[in-house]
Each structure stands twice: as C-alpha cells, then as structure tokens.
Image (cartoon, rainbow, N blue to C red; front, side, top):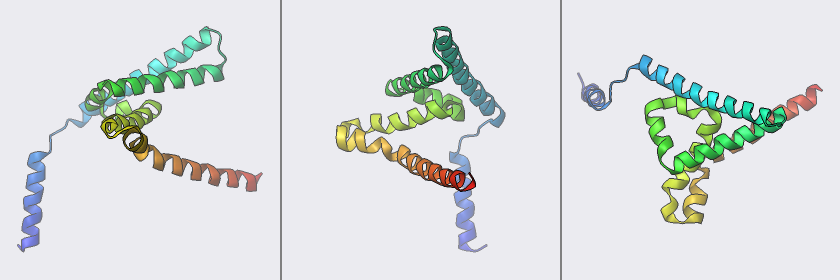
Length: 148
C-alpha cells in the first residue's frame, strides 16, 4: 500500500469512529410523523379560517402567515432547533422550514447588531432561493409567452 491509500484508510476509520450510527427506518418514521403533524396543523388552521367565513384564498394566506409566524417564534425561543434535531427533514416542511432557515441566522448573529448581524445574515440562506426562484419564474414566463 502506498501512503495515500494508507491515509485514506486512516481517515475512513476516523470518520467511522466519529460518525454516529443512525437507524434509517426510525429516522424516516420520525421525519414522516413530524412533517405530517405540521401539515395537519396547517390543514386544521385552514379549516378554521374557512369555518370563520374566509374564502379559500384568504384562508390559505392566513394559514401561511400563522405557520411562518409560529415557526419564527419557535426558532427565536430555540424550540424549532430541538424539534429539528429529533425530526430531521420532517421539520423542514417547505413554509415552516424556510421561515426557520431565515430566522435562525438572524437570531444567531443578533449580537453583531441589527444591520450587520440580523439584516445581513438573514439572507445567507434566502438569497440564493430568491435569486433562483426569480430566474426560474422569468424562464417559465418566457416559455409561457412564447408558447401562448
């Protein structure tokens, strides 16, 4: 064996020792349960708004606002991170996960001030999403315009 193969083997052994063993089936079940619970809460909120007299469009907007607000509040209190440790990908249901991804860097860097800490770090995750979302919408709009 040459030295590069030996160092690769040593590195693999170190990684295997340091990496926690995970039960994939248990992790998938927890992710499914938590993600499903978040979706059920969203559906219950949507039904509540409709029963209170809101239209379906209004109820959807109110539900999105409530889910984002609750996600940001739970992130600020440190609860969402604990949920994420146990639920894994299940806690990243699109709207709540994105709100958490926006709020977490802002909370983490609040000591650096509102402009350079919260304001700048809040867009570390959201920036690429906004840029690629905007570009994708332009491409889809152009395709739609051309095919129309």
